[in-house]
Image (cartoon, rainbow, N blue to C red; front, side, top):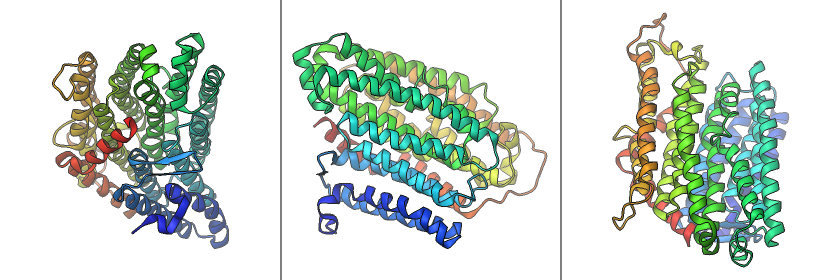
Length: 493
């Protein structure tokens, strides 16, 4: 099917337009129908329609622009698909979750769709201002989503912390953008790279880079900008925690790719001026982020906080891309981002499902779960072992691609980043310890109850999707890795 025949000049933003329309009409649907299930059904249909349109664009290898602000290519299509999968899983389980609001259902789904629209807009933007607008649309929607948890003071506290730290992030980012604009007279990333060849490296350029790395470092919870993540993930409803951990964080990483890879790899001028220094800066941030995330996760007794610190560590792994700055590294990073959606998303979905069944958030509450809910215990074990990088699961395959990019190039030459790959492998071994704690609680320790656990059907469907994805992408990664390679080639074109 030719998408341009249907959407014309708006084909590049067609997947976004569907979600924008949904975000605008869903509060009205809830108001008129007074039925939260009907509102949920409409939201789910719109999300599936958006995924279908994007899948067709990817299959057609469509490339195009909209309003000279948004470019759709192989990279944009893959990033949009990642965000859509996250949104689908979040919407699918939201109606069944006992944690989500029952009073503002239309607004809740509108915020989910609005936040995802911001992520999608960021994926196709190559201008600092349009990227900033997309990030802020997602951030502001996320602040509201965190506060919409039912009857829980922790949600209000988490939302306030999120807003304050998010405000600091915004201030640093816009300061960095203003410094770059003052220096180069443009906010187009390619033009900044070209213009810097004329001005050379100076203190303004350095301050701008540090400010933007810090500002967007908050979005991905990179150390030392990670302090908000555990409180927010613990305080928010589990579907929202899943959405932030697997979607919002991917948007932040995408921003790093779009700004700094374009500036320092495609923009050979900047590469000649400050390439190695920036690479080592990212390498240090990546090493500290993965180490702090994994070490602090060991001490956590709340499973949502443990998964939050695990997410911090995963962001550290993906930041290897920013140190290596090669096309193969970007392909590996994108593939790990894709598999992470199902590994971490699946783990959060199980936590949410068990909360619906009356099981608490502490690791000790999972004692004896293997007897009470054999499939859920098995699925959780799969997700955790995949996150740790145990073969033949998806996490092992994606880490293999990502870490190997730091060890050597495709021509067999050993890389200068072998030490970073060694730290990443060591951290993966550390993570196995705290993941094994949960598996031990489920399979070895005895629980106080023997009553079978029953969870809502939408949660079961979502968890099965994640289990299948984790197994299939581990055994046959080329299904997605080919798309990742095409996306990386489009970024470096």
